[in-house]
Length: 97
Image (cartoon, rainbow, N blue to C red; front, side, top):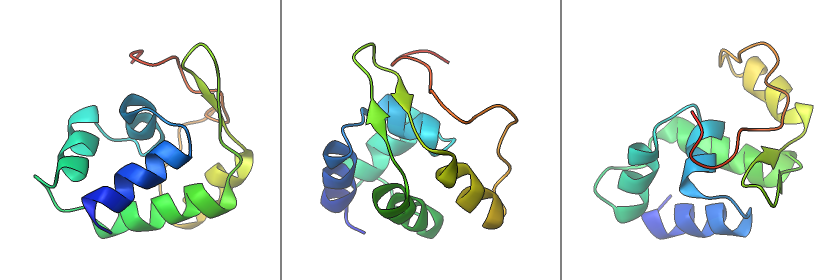
């Protein structure tokens, strides 16, 4: 996945870099680095982006938060990601920790 493809995917899902970082359990600086080409997009991020695009119902909200389906959590758990309890949406508003 190229930096341009990652940025395009994020924008098509209607997500900010902050929201994408939260969903990926990453830092905004990671997303910025991947999109700028300063850092290579890791393989697991390729998989996560694919799942987000094709297996999830992502709904950015007017307040900057994001709601998404439990399907994302179930898929992430099957792939071995540790998903914090209660993280079935919505995500916090943009800029929130």
